[in-house]
Image (cartoon, rainbow, N blue to C red; front, side, top):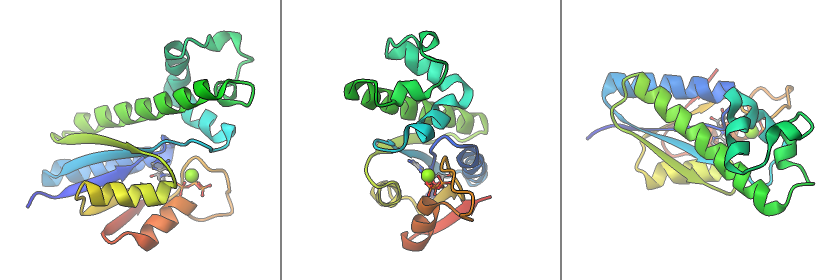
Length: 175
Ligand SMILES: Nc1ncnc2c1ncn2[C@@H]1O[C@H](COP(=O)(O)OP(=O)(O)OP(=O)(O)O)[C@@H](O)[C@H]1O
Ligand SMILES: [Mg+2]
């Protein structure tokens, strides 16, 4: 049976390394690749800004949401901050997530993966990643060992830890 890899990305540099490794494996073994993202509703504005600041995603999203990014006080945090209407924040978070996935999928195709799919979910990130893998019939999960969080004393992020401990399939945590 064809192998199926699920790689999870929060848009962080480490997650992109995970996408690269997963794509290389999928290309080499002609496996299907699903790239999953869990919408970060309720995460701190600072984390969301870090995600949006990757490769001008914020500018893209401000165009889409009709929020003039240049007129805001210079930080992507303003897209997600408490001063913005809740509906706008939800929309911005959704669009950033979709853009993260679109770019990751392009990258995987560039690496030669023929069968690339994307999936989104919400809720607890680790639970959602494990569920996405199960629902899609993936037999391996690839995550980064860290993400957008900034707790440097942690060796491995909480999402990576929980997925590694609780998934029933092989998990690769990329450093
Ligand atoms: N919302 C998400 N959607 C998809 N994948 C995610 C998400 N959050 C984390 N991941 C995956 O888990 C990996 C590790 O991120 P994790 O969140 O565990 O670390 P962190 O952000 O540094 O720490 P913490 O979130 O505990 O503060 C990421 O590289 C990514 O592969
Ligand atoms: Mg995190």
